[in-house]
Amino acid sequence: MTKQEIINEVARALNLKSKEAKPIVEEIFNILKMSLESGINIEISGFGKFIIRKKSSRLGRNPMTGEEAEITERKVVTFKPSKLFRDAVNNGNQRN
Amino acid sequence: MIKIELISQLAKELELPRKEAALIINTVFDGISQSLAKGEKVEIRGFGSFRIKQTKPRMGRNPKTGEKIDIPAKIIPYFKVGKDLKSIR
Image 1 (tube, chains in turn green, brown):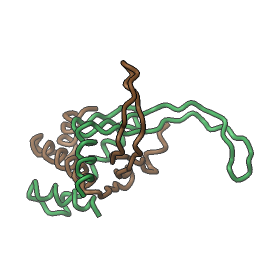
Image 2 (image 1 turned 180 degrees about the horizontal axis):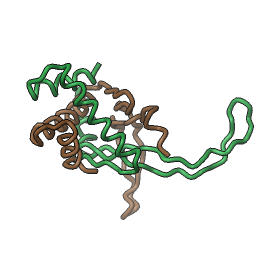
Image 3 (image 1 turned 180 degrees about the vertical axis):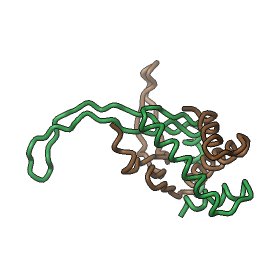
Image 4 (image 1 turned 135 degrees about the horizontal axis):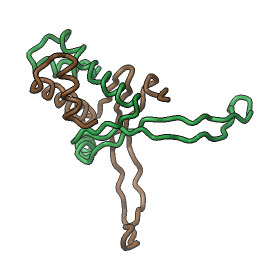
């Protein structure tokens, strides 16, 4: 479970108990989520960008019945990793 | 929202010194990055999960010269949006 590992890292860095670090880490993702929900993109240097994209409505099909149905206009969140992050992941996993 | 704004907001909401908030934010994003570099995935409930994905080698083109180039297979970070984050109106 790596979320726990991240909580442990934060606890270690701040000299906190893991129990105390947990709500702090959760608050970060809460802030990110609220920001995206209110339509604000996020840019973390060295990590990447969370971008809200608007998808227009289109015709789709119910795969079960084959019936045509309109897929309503929606907004989706996409993540674009930074070059630093991409290189770290590619280099790290090539070595394994 | 950029990183320093996230740091400010975290500091304000949890009444932490800015320096500590910055240390926390950096630790979290470095932690995710290191986990993926080790080939692990990180799941944050209610937000989404960070995973790795293998891409296939493919032929690309230099858009300027039109020259063909080999693009090797890579392992890239990938974010899968969580259920709760999917329903943005």
